[in-house]
Image (cartoon, rainbow, N blue to C red; front, side, top):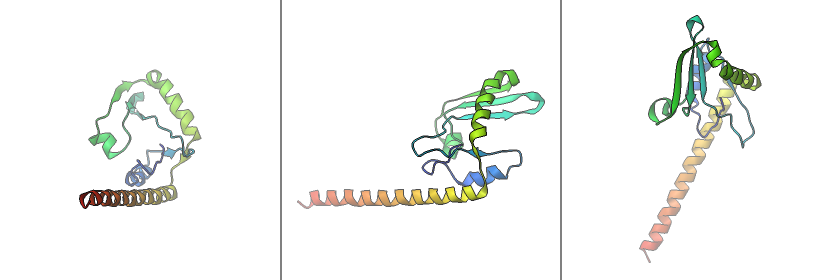
Length: 138
């Protein structure tokens, strides 16, 4: 995953890393690029795989609220998903394990970003109101 304070929900991260069956890693890229593929591979019992490809992020909006376009493939055997697994494995090798201190740092960055956005919106609203008042009083 890519942790982006502008769009990534911080709250589910603690829950994800507490799951013993999940290994979670993230990319720490330069500010101009993101690891952005949305590809989810689940290994099921009896050597079958479930594959989800599409536009959905692992967020409340991406999974339940937004209108998204995804392809859902169920009950593939290994040969049907091998190319996807190879892509994922290569990317996963380059990623950094997500740990609680990273999550705390990320949440702090996200909170600063949200506070900055609130201040910016408040300033913008104030300036708009000032402009409107100047037109109304002239």
